[in-house]
Picture (tube, rainbow, N blue to C red):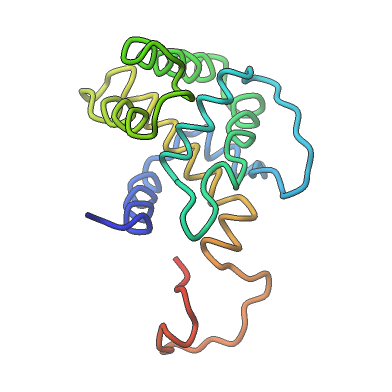
Length: 186
């Protein structure tokens, strides 16, 4: 069994070489997850879609000793990307995939994805990720993972708590025992 950190690092490496052009445009244009304490008004996602994304992204990056996707407000980041940076057809593709996720939940347990047990949510997400290459559900899940990772690691929590990035780094010391510094920078 791999650790959460190892899983995130592996996904980040995979996504790093294949970020969508819209995600790259959003990042280059300054799109980031909202800062802690800022109010946010949703423009694309409705209440049910937000609940689904909250649950799905928290399965992708769960809270452990650091906040997860919900703590980093990834759903708000996804709404911003869909509203401001994604072309209409990309937005439609994402929302259709989200609807398929909801339909899979209803088929499995006759309830919305957000109301399923964590185990059932993970089972459905695994099915989406293991669908044949090129399938609609697989493309949706890849996009959801991409947006989750980008949203998390561009957030204040992702940068300062998870990655422990400091605004002004200290003196470079190339060889310091891990037990002296605590967590290593990712």
